[in-house]
Length: 182
Image 1 (tube, rainbow, N blue to C red):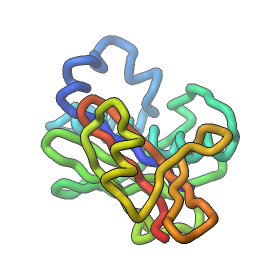
Image 2: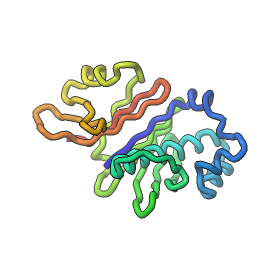
Image 3: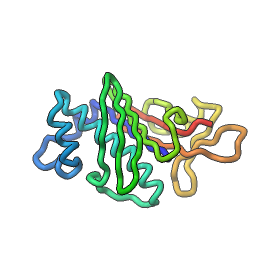
């Protein structure tokens, strides 16, 4: 299983007031809050952790088949480097590996379940616009993105009858489609 999440950093800065009293208590564990409070770039760390939680949530949601909101149940641990972060997100008895790309205007996280490697995943970055599904298929002629009966995204590689799982994330001006390589 895989999940991905992208955050448009400028939109997040305009739309969110994560500094309001009690907000972080509702979504971040004490250890996660400590990471936020001890860094110079608190906005970056808040959105990094949120992106990790969202990417892992997409795996959990796909596995369980139901939506829920419990960000405290998803616990993040990570190491940051220049423009990257790697870590894990724990949910109940499961642990998901994460890899995050940090750009000046975006944060993009991929989360993976058991048995998958980041080298198994391809990501297409694009502008978030209406009709992205049709545009994606026109711009990527070797594959086809479509939603299955449960409205979950899948990739069909031309010449193959079976689909591979995909994850779509869009926020502000950013769109990311992550899928398993053929």
